[in-house]
Length: 214
Image (cartoon, rainbow, N blue to C red; front, side, top):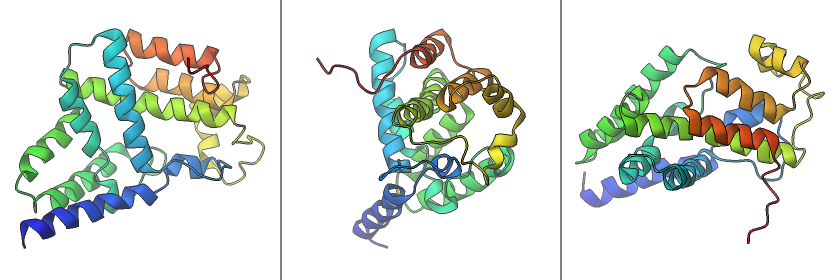
């Protein structure tokens, strides 16, 4: 296979993510003309990483982080967007790692890119842990924006099995909004440091979608 064909094949494969809608938004019956794709999530989490690095002066290689985030959803070009409520982390990891290896073994730099993907997935280095926190918080920020647009009606979730999750059920039972529930849920589940937790709490307590651009 020629270098030209490898370039085009990889591009076309990744291009699928532009049209793959995030499963979580479909599960919650988000009502909006355009709903976020995986590719848009990748862009969003990269922009969040830049802002977090800037404001909190993390000692991380931001270019490595941006590259890491660029490929962190690569497996979903093949397996789709599977959530923690559909499949176990172990099952998803196995499927995703196999898919990524299959995709990258055709590129000359495939081994190096795969190592970066696996580093992100392990979230043990400072760059991967930073990127991992950005990945989780970005979803919550998008959730908040959809909530502010009234895109989700909690009374119209008849087929949503996530409502039966113990943590989700308890937080909603306490009267929290959809987005506040997710922000608090992720604070409980993911290893946010004090800065990510501070941003998460700010989002809980403030409207974020209608700020003066100046």
